[in-house]
Image (cartoon, rainbow, N blue to C red; front, side, top):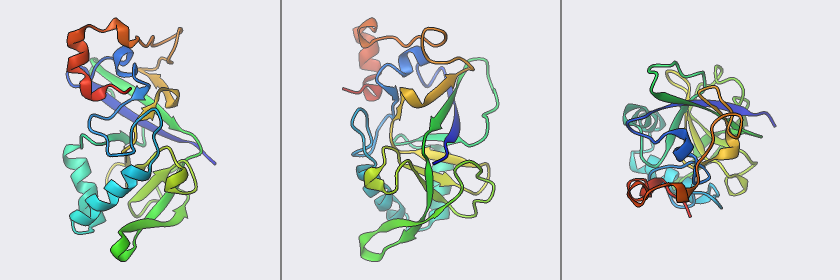
Length: 204
């Protein structure tokens, strides 16, 4: 299966520096949906929440997509599918690779909510996308460790509802993760005040 490359810029006055951001296993989400957090995440719980969220909004996929674009959500991380322009020297620009990615359409399943539709070849090139879609790294939600929602209208984006493991982070500001690039701190390096401030990003 092919890989999907995603890009995200984070402001220093909103998110911690990469050395701290990645301490707890990766790019963690502020308020993850059930089942959407490291270290033993699956996409199943997040899928149930996603299905409910779409249905609560009247089942209009375009409207749901617009809501994600308009304000962002604390239960997800939005990435672009093309390199994010450098808007400020103080922004941290992440490149993330989802290995063995797969893209699927969504279909309404009646009382049971939303289900996966047919698989579509939009992993490496979002240009042909003419509908919103789901991003997984397995053949089904239950066998995936990622759940994303791809927006086709406007600039191509994907909102991930599952935490992003550090091993998926290809680079930050052009530097790799590790001794030759971004050195990630350990939890014990933080002060008690910093731990309290970052409580929502911390993972067990």
